[in-house]
Length: 134
Image (cartoon, rainbow, N blue to C red; front, side, top):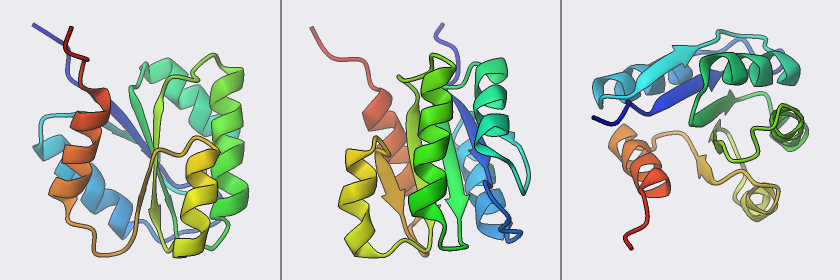
């Protein structure tokens, strides 16, 4: 039996609005994932350390403050420094369309805006983590 997909949901920076992160965390849990929610006001180093300690497959960041172009790359760098460069990184929040290609080029695989149906996020994770057919 394969282990459940482990997802860390985190709120980096000073943004205190966490309702969306909690909704996504619950939806992922209901879809059968193991979900760890770190809470608000996490530093990139704190997120990377929690991801390492929890041995996660996915890190989901929720950023509503507009600081996504600074915080998301810092989290990616902190994960890389922990040797976790293979972790799937997702970003949710108020993300302008013009920032999405740059974020994806930085290694943020999925970017989800307000109103994204949670089954779409579940499907994305499952597709990204699917084992290749040989």
